[in-house]
Amino acid sequence: MFLDPNYIRDRIRTVPDWPQAGVMFRDITPLLQDAKTFRALIDMFVYRYMGQRLDLVAGIDARGFILASVVAYELNLGFVPVRKKGKLPFASITEEYALEYGSAAVEMHADAVRPGQRVLLMDDLVATGGTLLAGAKLLQRLGANVVEAAAIVDLPSLGGGDRIRASGLDLYAVCAFPD
Ligand SMILES: O=P(O)(O)OC[C@H]1O[C@H](OP(=O)(O)OP(=O)(O)O)[C@H](O)[C@@H]1O
Ligand SMILES: Nc1ncnc2[nH]cnc12
Image 1: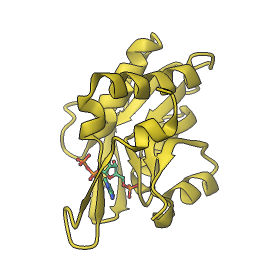
Image 2: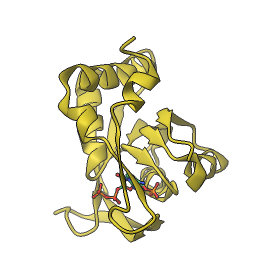
Image 3: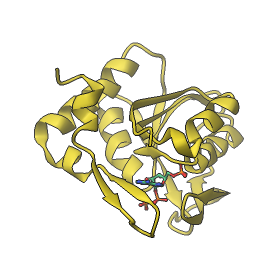
């Protein structure tokens, strides 16, 4: 029961018109706040990846950090942050991208991964797919092999999942909100 995607989906709150009119914001905080659903969620990722050959888990600022660091710890792997622009102290590389509501840029330290390392890339949600694609691009520019992109939620009506798969990157999302 706890590893049923509907159990996860049912604990995501929808907030209409936030942060701007027309956006149905899928809020994962109730899911994280409940000990059982948080553990069930993390376990779904851990069971999926525990048999796979991985070197690192990368997480996207900010909500991807919540997942990726715990999953990395559980899989006995290191964690790498993909940060919003201007936050990293050391030599960094940058990718700009468009969002459902605006534009942004993400960065990684230039020494965050070594060429050939196998990396799982995590974020909370796929809307247009721009954020995960930008994160994957950073990893690929550093020579990493992005084994899969993973998220809690896909919003298929915004086309991000298709965009990610069309780029050649595998995507796993625990659940989807079709409307
Ligand atoms: O698929 P996309 O269209 O790229 O959208 C998904 C991204 O949008 C949200 O983050 P947001 O940029 O709102 O930043 P936050 O984590 O700082 O709230 C979400 O956490 C994803 O990172
Ligand atoms: N609809 C949405 N809900 C939550 N986070 C998002 N990021 C981009 N679109 C979003």
